[in-house]
Length: 281
Image 1 (cartoon, one colour):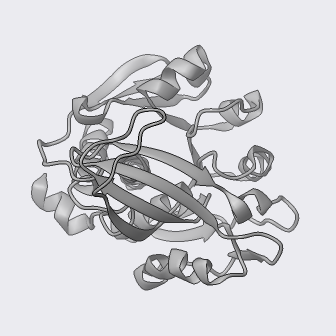
Image 2 (cartoon, rainbow, N blue to C red):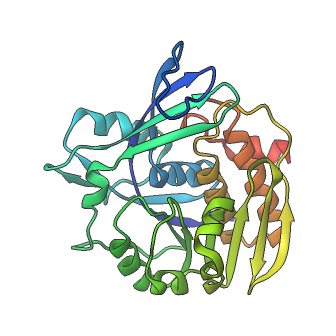
């Protein structure tokens, strides 16, 4: 079977990660952290995850004309993601995410989007593909226009939670949210034929036309850093569905991939390969 062609529209960031014994509360300073720099951004994470998990991936994104861009794109290039339509905005800095991670793997994230906000609709062409994935770290108007002109399977990961036009939700074939995002959007996520709610270590549920059609739980793992786990899940589920896997199997595949991504530090270095997921399954 040939690899499904997946197009991802989304963000590219460089993650500056401080791993500390615990996360600070408001106004508190926590010391003894270890600093790391990793390629990230929800769009880039999902693109590389889908590539490693069996897709042939094209990423539509925007970076700045600065040294940070090459650092942020390094693993995408090495991983074989198609970057031919990548845009460079000379007036913006490449996006940066500041991430604090505790020893238990929980995180806090602040993002300076930079060039991600410059990904506009002018000249944006989505190539024919089996599936299109987007998230909400680039302008929503750009996503809505791209989705409206796309004929294949459209998955939208409604993260970070924010107001979106009804047309984007109604165009979606599948909406993916975590519990916090599900509470924010409420019944609006039922606009898509399928919606999926993730619950971390407690697994995920997939609904078809508002009725639960599949559930799955991830394998027990030692979580080191949960950054990127949700992106891995979304990419894995889209790849599995593009391969026509049954819903239950596709959801189990996605939960397993997401769990594996939490076992190593950094968003993109931790993204699992297909063989790793298949072996654990």
